[in-house]
Image (cartoon, one colour):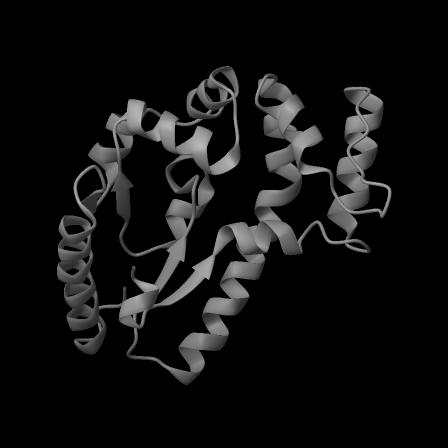
Length: 191
């Protein structure tokens, strides 16, 4: 919704895909790590990352998840910072939003001026995960449990978008927050 309002969004998921493209160092490091430490093959026949195979390991093995994050997160952050710097050089008075699913769980939170949490309760989150990603109940629960509790995130967020209501209710919240961010950027406060 922020994009629809004209926001420039730096997408962590997009960078997560870029850093593991064929030919990138992270892909080989991940393949080697999973083959040697977890006896898992995580490459597709075409040499791309087999995301489902990675997920099958990391959402049931905390050590594997941390090892994967240690290989990818610094590279993702660097890509996001570079993209942000390029946009900011051309548009110094425009807010830049970072879409980061694990913002509160990692180091990335230190790199942003303020945070916006898009919130749903755990039951609705589970239902949406299962529908969107085709996950089983156990797989959805494993993903949710691998994250910080949503209530802890609520306590850390500067702004909260409650996404449990209607589309119109969500849109109203997003529009209000977007206006605040634009006003802050015009005042030179960042954002």
